[in-house]
Length: 267
Image: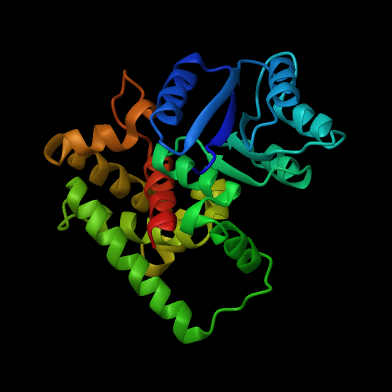
């Protein structure tokens, strides 16, 4: 009988922790080893439970995620660590990776994405090793041929198109094309999320001979139309807890980030 993957959760957002706990407990191949709402408690849990994977938020009271990683470096037992990070925390995220984090997931994220990352790090089933291959590509050790890269881009483009059409983004509005290209670009290079207005929008604007502000407004309009006329039930499930209950819709960046990360998993 295969041993379940033991997971420790560490985040001070109690609503998010409740959702993550329910998700882990509903996975047949995972076991929740414990949860902590601050860095000190996280360290105690890690030392006593010796989990396979730790899901660790960067910003926590008493002891933040970076300090936890620093303490883990001196431990004999070192679990795999997935860092949860938000927009605007790019420098802290880079430090977390340098300090030993195996992977980071940008909030908001899809729960299935988290599950796949946990399994990849734990080396469970067919997904084990996929993360290593992706890291090797990022480090430049594996260079795709021009033809292979074109094929990969075409596949990604098809999957993104199917996804946003299913969501109900109208194909006749300008924002549809801009949104699709933005998701494809981010799926290929997640670093673009750290400069959406400075890099991503200008890049798309140049491609279509328009301005970055028009790209931003058009994408916003496309997302608004999807929520007003599209597959609202699917949209609400897809974005789940990440939605702000007052505005009821994700920002442009949140929308692009979540769909792009989903595409990176599925293609």
